[in-house]
Image (cartoon, rainbow, N blue to C red):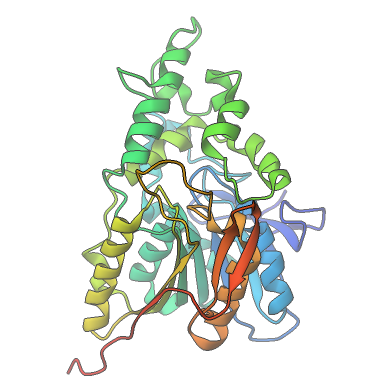
Length: 378
């Protein structure tokens, strides 16, 4: 399909129009747009997480469009994810992390906004998408109207889930590295990681979808039909993306740079987030506190869920890292409130212990932490 063209066939979001851009960075990017009839409408761009696609935000976007039909909404497939292209193998296959740096994702986002004629936008990121949003806001403050960060961190370097489970437990390594070892046993396989760059988990594990459903896409609060559509997409993400992004994430640390952030931020964090848990939230807020003291960023941090992760035994399932999967309507409500008032609602959203896919609301009882930017920095 030519660059900049659109297709009105059904999209992964079941809303909007699918389009493609051949970006100035060389990436062929798929996106979905939900247009507004209002001229000079605000724009929101959704940035999904690691190994996800635009589908990750589908229910949230549908709910948000119902609340604010005058806002233009976009969801992107990041480089190497969904239907967007991989960076070129001849430049990237030997060490994929060199082509999946935060700066690369930010360059794609800037090129996309320029291709669409978007001067500035609110950025809504999840997980990996929150780091891209932070990096972009630091590099291009004039193009960011505000940030919404879901399942966020300022530092993924050394993260034990990414290191122990993803990189060493699944991808590569002498002790485990299931996919690397499986591929290296094939007589037609060359060298790791170059020969695996365009392969998928299915090439390393014929039961990759079963693994993804049980260990990677699992979420007790999400609609099972929604998860069932994500699983085959996850198993289709190229190993070059899996490896390049996780290697990058394991050294990414934006804490010092965030002292220079200059926008308003909404952070939505759920109490059973095991990827970026409470310690990451403390560090993220500390980094943003430094920006607030410098008359830069202001923020509101909001907690979803009631059940905490403890060592005292099994806990009733509650909202976790993929908050927008389990509570898309609640997330849309808070995004809408942020767009219109600068703050989320004060309502607490949590999973019904009797039916975790049912999200309950406790009016006015949310745990909120608010930090306004200082005003006297002369």
